Image 1 (cartoon, helix red, strand yellow):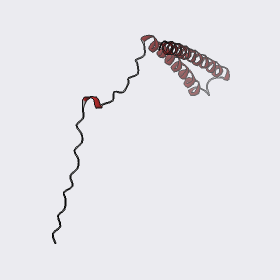
Image 2 (cartoon, helix red, strand yellow):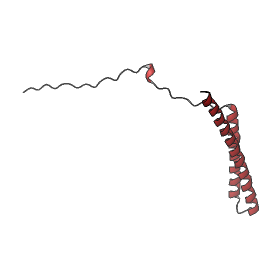
Image 3 (cartoon, one colour):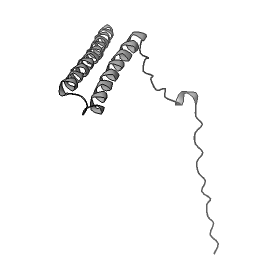
Length: 103
């Protein structure tokens, strides 16, 4: 008894066309002003972190009053950084609402 087997071949994939790729939308680059404000905020955070690190390293050598002053200075720097970033976010949100309302 002879049985004939049918040879199974895999289907070839369809050729890709130029339009088959979906372009991912790129987020717009930050404006120089926004970038400068973000860098300023980052510098303030770095200064605050340095103050706190200094207070931790020399904690036994310094008085409680000195550590408390460093804490307040760091808190003030972080408050400034938060304010800068909050203002930037508020301004960006306002601009976005204006653009949406025009559409």
